[in-house]
Each structure stands twice: as structure tokens, then as C-alpha cells.
Length: 472
Ligand code: BYC
Image 1 (cartoon, rainbow, N blue to C red):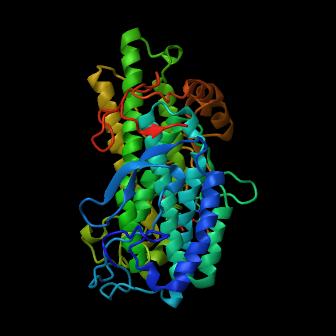
Image 2 (tube, rainbow, N blue to C red):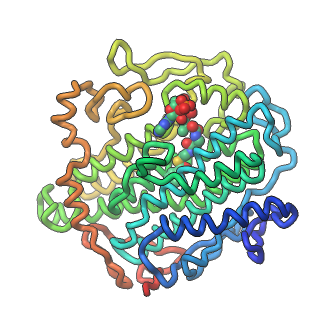
Image 3 (cartoon, protein in one colour):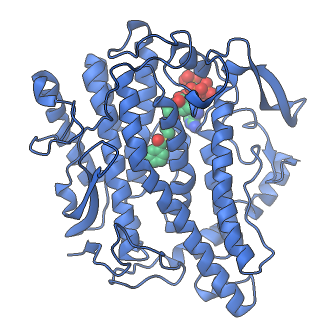
């Protein structure tokens, strides 16, 4: 394995693919299927070329190259972070043993399942975002959308490599299935709920990249701890790419809030829908939606699956090595959110079965940073109004609160009351229609739509008015 990606190969890689002819042939026969999928399910807006980042090196410095590339010529490759020959398992019953370079027979099914679930989300997000190019607010944003899309495509490659290289025929079949399931499909939907929701407008896109990509960050962070070393190294490199996706979300919402606040001050009213921007109420409702569906992605508050994954060494905790405990957790407990006699409360459970909750808490505290940041914009403008994260019980479809309805403050509601009032907290048809009415493309260099402020900086030190995308 080298740090440097070999682009002379049909499938660029740093895993010495040419040394394993069978694997190389198998992946080369999957490649046209991937390209067909990209053609039929990927971005719909035709472009000449896009200023994209391509991975060239997995080392600490200078890992990416920027340049204008025709989307169909983008080189999706397989890159694993450097191998540490002495790496040891950091948690669970195999703690201290050498990390695995092969899949142990007894954990084959579970590992495959985790890799398939992870892999399924990557193409799903591309499918969800495929029509957004047609309404991009600027060339800068259009370029960022495509950057996110090609990298999600690469993350699919990352998981397909593992399936092909380590899971035999079953793995190859799963790799095919990853291209057959589609976001929102009636017959063959994507596995996890949030990946079957639409991303029909750019406010949704920024909320998705803020909240849902952040779930990706946390899940990849736990898989980076895995005893299965190739999975760990794959995820480590994916996390590097992932940070730009969240940057897109964070700054996208910043820029929307900034623009809305500007018009609120100028017109001295909260009721700014008529002035071509998105009112704070609508921003809060979109936030409520994307946050709550992303909380569902962590699974149940208690889960024997996650306890087994941890004990076996397949999936660790966020920042496993920084935790000050025995990394086995067989005698520990944790408080988890739960329904107690029908009310929202907390219960103490064995730490191992509460690990989904542990991860979700890390995620929630990270989500707060964004909200604080957006609130700072409101504060600095002298406005009283604040955005906030809704209660963990709000709008949940998975876990302890799936069977109840609650307000963003965590007050339980009867099903009737929920039906009557949910439009106060989740985007209504009126909100969605307003947001969509603003989604008119601005594909002219240096120009930007009315509802969003320009970014403070361009990409790779280029100015905002750089020709990030050439349209036909
Ligand atoms: N929707 O035992 P439980 C990303 C199922 S995002 C539908 O609590 P567990 C990205 C569950 O499968 C990160 N079904 O679940 C972001 C189980 O089914 P079975 C993706 C769900 O296993 C943006 C049952 O309910 N990566 O990378 O502890 C753009 C009981 O659940 C859902 C991963 O998720 C749901 N939301 O935890 C691009 C990492 N949740 O066994 C990319 C891999 C649960 O009864 N996956 N179920 O048939 C995992 O670690 C775990 O499987 C989960 C679930 C955290 C997803």
C-alpha cells in the first residue's frame, strides 16, 4: 500500500489492485454498472466541466488536487488510509489483539450488514440530490453540490471494494443490490428512513448536509475504530472528504440566516416571505424535520445489535481511545431516553445496549454548535429570536418515542392534537411552496440568488466569482 493514488489504472487506487487480478476483474465489471447508475440516477443538469477536488494522496498533507473536470470523466477510486502494521483492537472482548486483516468467519454476517447499510446511504444521497443543479443559487453552490455528489459516489466505491475484496460472492451480490435499490422507490427503497426522503430544494440540501451528513461523520467515526482494519482505514479516509460536506451545510444555513436577517432589519418585520427570502419560522421547521429524521438514523436507544457489534470489536464509540474506562463496558450502565409509564423520561440500562444513545448524544452536542453559530448571527443583528434543536421525542419514527407524538419542547400530544398542530413545527405545503418558489437557477458567474448571502471565501482560494462550472 502506498500513500499515493495511482491514476494510470482503470480504477485509480492505492490498494495495489493490479496484484489481485481476480478482484481487479470483478471491480472492473462492476464499474460500468456504477457508471450506468451515475448516468441514470446521478445529477441531471448537463455541464461541460466542474472545478472539482480529486483525491491523490491519503497522507496528512496535500491529499487533493483541484481542477476542471467533465463529470463523466471524474475518476472514482479506492483509497484507504495508511496501514499501521502494529494496530491493535481498542475495545470489546478482543481488546489488545492485533487488528484483523481478514474477516473472521463468526462475524462475517454482521460486518457485511454494517458495510451494506453504510454503502446504501452513499448512492441514496446522490439520488436525493439529483435535480438540485437545475435550481442552484450560484456557480459556487453548484460546484459544491457536485463535489458532494462525486464524493458520495466515491464512498460507494469504498464500501463496494470491501464487499468485493472480503465477502466473496455474497459481497458481489450485495454490491449489485446497492445499485438496484433507489431512494424513495416503492419496490426497492434505500435501507434507512432519511435516505428515502426528498431533497427538493436548497434549504433541504443544506439542512441535509448539516444534519444527515453529520450522522455519517459519527457512524464513520465508530467504524473507523473497527477491529477489521480495511474498514477502519477506509472510513478514516472517507472522514477527510466528509468534512467538506458538513462545511457546505453549516455555511449554507449561515448564509441563508444572514440574508433573512438582513431583510428583517431592512424591512423591520419578521414577515419577510414577500421579500424573496426564507422566514426564520420556515428555517426552524426545516431544521426540526432534518434533525428529527437524522436522530432516527442512530437506531433504537437500546439495541442488542449495537452491544454485539461493540463486544465483537466491529463498531466502537466516537473517540474510543479518549474514553477513560475499560473499553469493554461489561459492568457499566448508562441513562437512556425512554418512555416511562407513557411519559418522556430516562432509564438506566447496561452501557453496552445503550451505545446507540451514547453516539446520538455525541452527535446532538455537535449539532448544537451549528445552532449556536446561526444564533450568533441573530444575536449580532440585535434580534431576540433564536433557532433551537427540538426535543429528542419530537417527530420520531425509530426508537423509544416512535409510538408517541410530542412538541419541540417535549410535551406529549394526543394523535389528534399532533395532526392539528404539526404544521406549527414541520414544513407545511405553504412553506414548501414558498421555498420552492425561490429556487430559480442563478448560473451566471459572480451572481447569486436573492434568498442567500454570498460565501465569505471561495473554494481552494479562488474568488466567489470564479468560473466554478462551465455549462454547455
Ligand atoms: N430506518 O437494533 P436497532 C451516511 C432497523 S449516514 C430503517 O436499534 P441498530 C451518509 C435496524 O436495522 C451513516 N430501519 O438498530 C449521510 C434493525 O433492523 P433488524 C450510515 C432502521 O442495528 C449523508 C431494527 O430497526 N451508516 O453515511 O442498533 C450522505 C432495530 O434497530 C433504522 C450507518 O448507519 C432507520 N433509521 O442501529 C451520505 C452505519 N434504524 O435488525 C452518507 C452502519 C434502525 O431488526 N449501521 N433500523 O432487521 C449501523 O451502525 C446500524 O445498523 C444502525 C442501526 C445505526 C443504522
